[in-house]
Each structure stands twice: as C-alpha cells, then as structure tokens.
Length: 70
Image 1 (cartoon, rainbow, N blue to C red):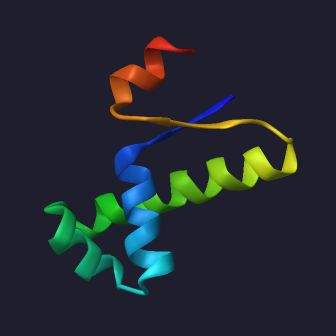
Image 2: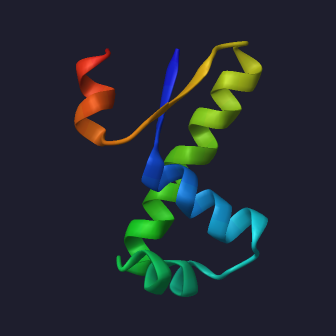
C-alpha cells in the first residue's frame, strides 16, 4: 500500500486538476510555493508508483497517520 496525505492530494488537485500555479496553490493552502512544489512532487511520485507497481493508494489525513501504518 502507498499512503497519500490529504495535503499531497490537495496540492495535486489545485495544480494538476484546476491548473493553478504553485504560487496560487500555496496561497489557497496557506503554505509557501516551495512547500506546494514538494507536496506535488511527492504526490505524483506516489500515484505513479501505485499505478506502475499495481499497489493500493490509501488516503491518510495526516503525516503521523501515514507513518504509523508503515
């Protein structure tokens, strides 16, 4: 299983689905553009890995929840 955090999904939704810039997404999420860049990169990597490796993609509310399930 691959765990995708809620903020990773939100960053992908804003940038990839809605077409916002990382700067605009950062303002909506109340984080820096650099944080959005990191989140989008992590999310895309996880989604790609889940598709390529045929793994379940599981939504997690928080980073702590993801770490406790490893």
